[in-house]
Length: 142
Image (cartoon, rainbow, N blue to C red; front, side, top):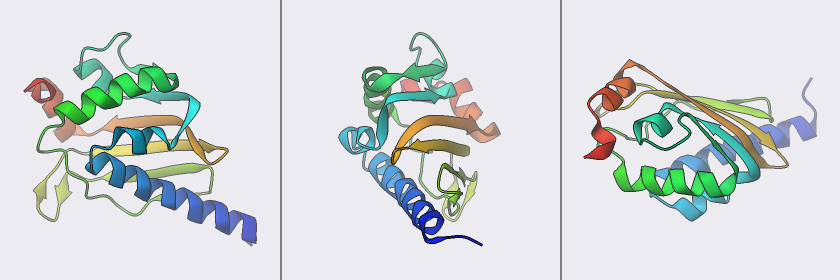
């Protein structure tokens, strides 16, 4: 049986997913950064696609800011924000952005976040075949 604290943690985590998606869709770097723990570790193929070094991983808010500023400046049109409802136990948070969205194809991802103290402490982004095609076509540089 879920107690009140578990229920509150799940509700809070689901709210983090909504706030994160809203901030990214508005290209709001400050809004995104406010959701992350100072010692964030983020892993994503987009780091490789953007040519940032070292490829694949960002640690801390300074490195994350550089990534987010670059991402929001270069986001391709096929990056849209239709997602499944988030799944969470209050600490681990995840959802899918499926390729097949109501208004056509979009970049496909699975977002996995670990929360600590109400902030995103670890963030891993797994890309699907359609999203990988964006990297192959170098669409983040157009």
